[in-house]
Length: 64
Image (cartoon, rainbow, N blue to C red; front, side, top):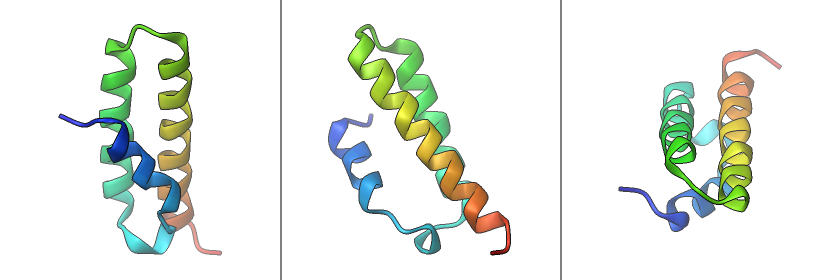
């Protein structure tokens, strides 16, 4: 089970540190948590986490 600390770590991630699959898996886990969350603030936070993970995965996949 993940907690808020897990997602706090994302803010310091560099796209070069992980494979795209890693970020996509993190986004999938955040989507599951978002579906189960009950507060608007948490839902918004997880939406931002999902967007960041997907963006990082795309940045790694696409050449500069």
